[in-house]
Image (cartoon, helix red, strand yellow):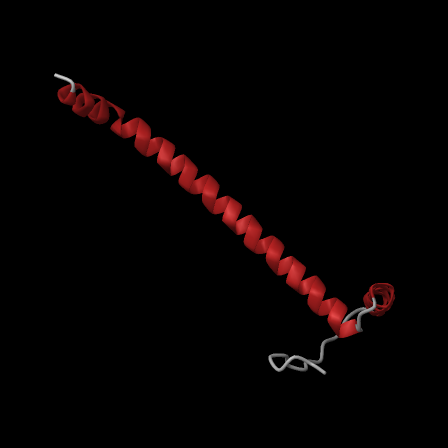
Length: 83
């Protein structure tokens, strides 16, 4: 039985990719549709992971820049606290 949130689509692919999908699906005990869906899901997860890593790198650099820019003010404020 198919999950209720699926939609049937028709796509065109090179014959070699169809044969590959069928071989892989058979080896993994999946249908052709199941193999293609799992492969696309894996690609989506990889893209989300890549975007997350890119975001962490961006905000990490932004945080370093902010820390460097505010270092003097923080040092001054801490100095005032210890006087």
